[in-house]
Length: 349
Image (tube, rainbow, N blue to C red; front, side, top):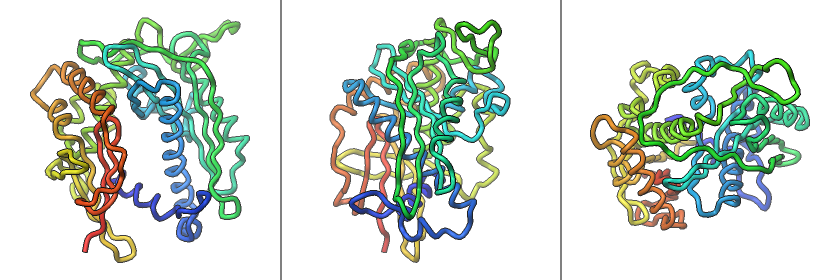
């Protein structure tokens, strides 16, 4: 539900123009803390989009996934969620994975900050550099990063600053064995520095494990997006599950995978909600292609095997996914992502 509402907030905060600008509503929100949240949400969207486009340019024949870095790190470092000692609070972090079935994946780290007019871009990019330095895959300095700072200003419009480092970080292919928690010590070794520094450094011999964490975490996100909340824990480690809120805390907004629609000629299953924006009722549907969803939920145990089958099918479907956005039969925009997920919005009478 939060993902749906955020998407609708984007529609309100921005208006189409020759250059991307804030709408009147996006600029005149009444509370300062809401503007901060709005800045974070829009920065999140732009950073993920830039990260995806950058990896597609570098690896045009690969599928691309975006995974929350905090949740991934929790599987290997128990204290990853409490990152204040390592200076990682206050930034948005994502791993962007470019992959093909049976081959080692490529990884990009994305660090993002946003300001609603009073932050300094240079300071944000400097902090993002420091934040990126705390996460290393293999030897120090070999993980490519994308640093993003977004300004939301009535006077200047929406300005996106981005710095990308060259290089390539290749991890293992998705293994066939089940995923388990690890407990790495939170330090990293910097050449020329005698003592280890605080941070998250993954040994090269654990790259296959990391590839498994990325794939399983992405599958958990797909299950949550489609409303299959009971399946989410099957793709998370014990440490990752501790970050999930209890679905019974707020039963009124629990998502349930009980809705089906045919969009762009494909059958989707998922969940839906209805929102009101200025008196207009909007229906929002999020789901996954039915055949891909069935692969991820089909039977107990052996989740790694199901995940491998899903990736094989998802990679093939990504090559032939529709490029159109508007679906006439649905009556609104319906965007299908390369991983088979769909987000569709339409106005209700």
